[in-house]
Amino acid sequence: MDIKNEHSYNKHTLNEPNKKRGYLKIFLGYAPGVGKTYSMLVDANKKLSQGEDIIIGYLETHKRNETEIQVSGLNTIPRKKIEYNNLILEEMDTDTIISLHPNTVLVDELAHTNVPGSKYKKRYEDVLQILDNGINVTSTVNIQHLESLNDVVKQITGINIRETIPDKIVENADEIVVVDITPEALRNRLKRGNVYKIDVAERALKNFFREGNLNALREFALRQTADEVNEDVTYYMGKHGIKNDSYSFEQVMVCISSGPYSKKLIRRGARIAKTYKCPWVVVDVDCTHKFATKLTAKDIKTLEDHKTLARELGADVITLRGKSVSSEITKFIEKKNITQVILGHSQRSNWQVFLRGSTISRLIKYTNNVEFHIIPN
Image (cartoon, rainbow, N blue to C red; front, side):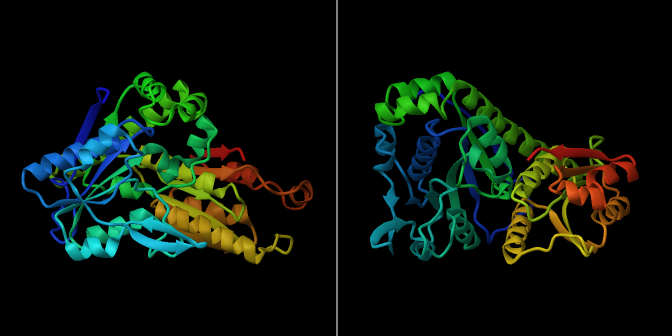
């Protein structure tokens, strides 16, 4: 293995003890190939040598020799076979893991989407059930799989990351180990065929694994760690009555509709709220104006999906109702002392703007001491 830095911090001693729930430890990387799974296995073998009851629930070696060597001493739970489209596919056998009730189980690739027909849609949901049964879980994930970073990762890399997990899964972990190597070292690993086969690696080096992409993703991973440590320090200071002069009085609001770009606004709101460590709310307006566009069944479903995403990212979700969108939002801003508002570019046609005016222009005109973020579609 290339030399890696592992930055670990433990939140378990700061949180209130909860003996019923398992301990979640995550090895976090900024890209495939940095050594998350290898590091997890080295850690597991160390615990095994100390007598801990530890097993593999699900693991992908990707046929990397150095990783497969670390697997040999650990017991692995056979995978559950699921039939889908006349194929027999394999997933983690969560029920068997729970019935065996080991002290710790290794679960690789936390953001994985399960085969249709599985008990849960996403692997992290299996992990939550295992934790709820008092079993410790050690897992792996890359920073680009955090839901709030989905848009910005696509903008930087040009690749749409389809498998994501709610940020709170990482935020609520008891311990995070950031597995870090330099982008140059990672690219050298690819060139040597240590991550993918040479022909695949050559294509990857020209796409996702470009040096600029890796530097940006690495910064996200290190920044995530810094944010989590800062939150723990704030929690500790509050618990022990230590004054924290950096407290933020910001209040963030995201205005959404049934439009496809609302998810982008929600993710931006989540990142801003996290930066300021402040409450945030996602608002939509049920407009009763006679010229308002009526929502179709598809629009309603899309809007509900947006609200679900907002809740997963930690927002309060509110639906306002009235004849004027700008009037209802203005009243809400004043009532809740909102300081930052996130909106998308107007979707109204020229005819609608002529009849009813611009919502954004009215909000800016009739509100005070509010910072507006107008996000391009």
